[in-house]
Length: 316
Image (cartoon, rainbow, N blue to C red):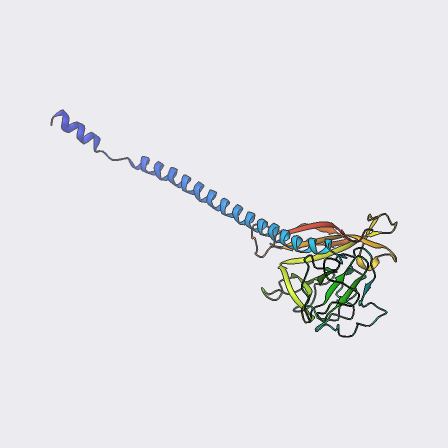
């Protein structure tokens, strides 16, 4: 056998059993590391996705509620605390022809001299809440104002006619007497929204949701869902009792002092994730607006958000 053949045979030798076992061990360690990194990354992504959804839901809810509350007591050309003709209150019946189908009570649509109202830990309207009823100990906030946009006259819709001196509510699509055409007067649709929490959602029973009773053409009241997975809704009214246009106290809606002017609303929303996270346990205690919730000790992530909303049209 010559030297060339010897070299070829040497090069053709395989690995030893020890070398093979070492290689398998190294490969197993690398594979376990890769699987662990993948699993951790997947869990992190899942948690991040859940939190991102909570934040998105919170933004959407606040973006819906905030401009509505901020617009409270806007009555077109005659702003501020103007006596509004054609309104209802505890002492006056609903004006003839202005009955609202499916109304939530005499004052739901037409108590316009109370542009912001609330009830503390209760739903006290005559109309039924969606599904199995409201979430226990959650608040209700009702907001009334004229629409931002000028509207065309429309029969069967509650509307506001205003000039620099007066405001009138009407429903027959005919401009009320005593007003002249634009620009000396303006027509707006009447906006009334009442925000509350239901035990159920369009997603299913037992899924709490933020909803609202909304004044619609007819006139009628419809119930619509804002966002699901809202576990609690609390509100406090910023009251001005000194006449300087600034809130000097925040109180629950049922505790508003007589004669106080509501100049701000503070809201809290507690959101619950729409899916479980087995790697997480919510052991936190949530304290806000005089309420204490938790610890829930379940596998749902939660997000508590709050917002203080200044009213633009109640200062004068």
